[in-house]
Length: 455
Image (tube, rainbow, N blue to C red; front, side, top):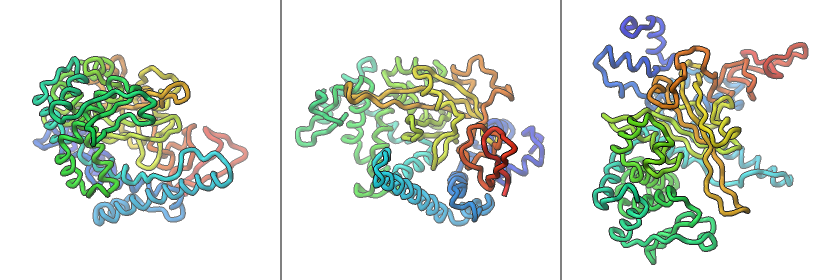
């Protein structure tokens, strides 16, 4: 088997014992050499649990009680519910720690940043479930196609077509409202008068998207509710259930704006040129990137992308993945990743080949996007969007033209975050890696002011 795959028997043994990741190139060789379904080799729930546990036990809280990878594997495989409980407990601990920091700063009269409150556990639970589904929901794709058939929508004037659809099919009128009437709201549905009110500050792509969201919530509520229940999130009183409902409505809205078959043909023809896709579908940069992560229909799969949206402070507000991505569950992104470069040179698309400590290579592109503001005193928010894939797929992207993808020296070494990265010579390191201790030597200065040694 090792000979068929072009690897050594010892390396194959490491793969079989979960000591090395199965890369995309190896998966392709498996598919060529053996009659197997490659979907069986996709990252499973156990692997995701182990990845989350590694992040948990890399926290300094466990410096005196290190947990080995074998123990994490055992916990994830034998008592997965306990492993999920550990992740949930650690998430609650992180929130409590951050809330305490903010409250302490507030009591001391210091700037504390964002306000206290608002549990993120529900958001993380929904993100995990969406990832488990491969970020693809066939029934919502079918529902979006049904809207096109019933509404005979015009792709050249989709916003007008959706407005007419809402009025004809759902007896709902769309009204564009002035800022002083809407306040901070961008979309508001008035159930009594059956009016959909949209703020005047929304651009055309955002107006189209919000109308499609309302169609999903009104006409396909039963379908969405069933999907929420099947996800195990419960009723309207369940916070995660409400988050999931909005996520599914947003998913369907993207599918209405960019129908699967048309989108799949377009990305194949245009080689994932995002700016050209924006023109063709009347969508924003962020909407296109999000939609690209969902093109995972069996028999017509696009490149399995990961996507992240981050603000200038490093807070992650969106995270989607049809495959493994170089970002941590409980932390920000590596400072060497090009998502940060987008803020330094806004308005440009930045590309990068990066390599994780385990040898996994990714190709990513990053750019800034600006959300609509409300005038001079309320400017819009600026985010960085990173979209990437395994380097094995980079040749399918127009952005990789002219890049020597196989040059061993071109990849930028990155990690999930400092506690999980063993690159001791990194000049960007902020914390010691797991199972390393800090040593101070006044006669030596390396890449950083500190030296770390194994415990």
